[in-house]
Length: 119
Image 1 (spheres, helix red, strand yellow):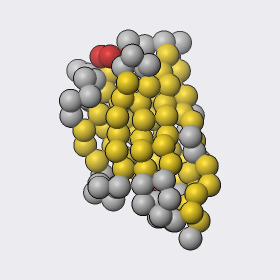
Image 2 (cartoon, rainbow, N blue to C red):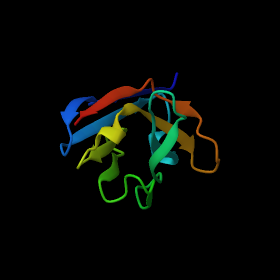
Image 3 (cartoon, rainbow, N blue to C red):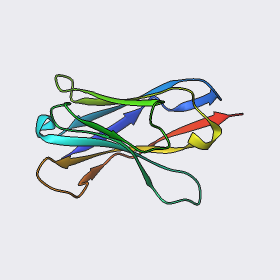
Image 4 (tube, rainbow, N blue to C red):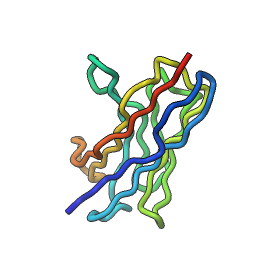
């Protein structure tokens, strides 16, 4: 079955950096767009970043543009989220997701990894 497993979360001070990883299995990774989302306590899940199946195009939420970078390694079936200049407002559970390149709905989700930014 399809599995998306996030790792790399943790506690970091404001201004610091973290790199999240999401390892995918059970799917043809190279034909899936990948994305990162986050959900803070008592808030709805929000879009953070997405990268196309080829890695040729990326999009970011305005709140993270210039601070976060999404990338992928198709040889390793892994997508990354490099986070820099972290702020307490970035504290959330971060999820990766996958959708087949010809559909609009995010089909598969990971279990999430906690990122906590202290002030």
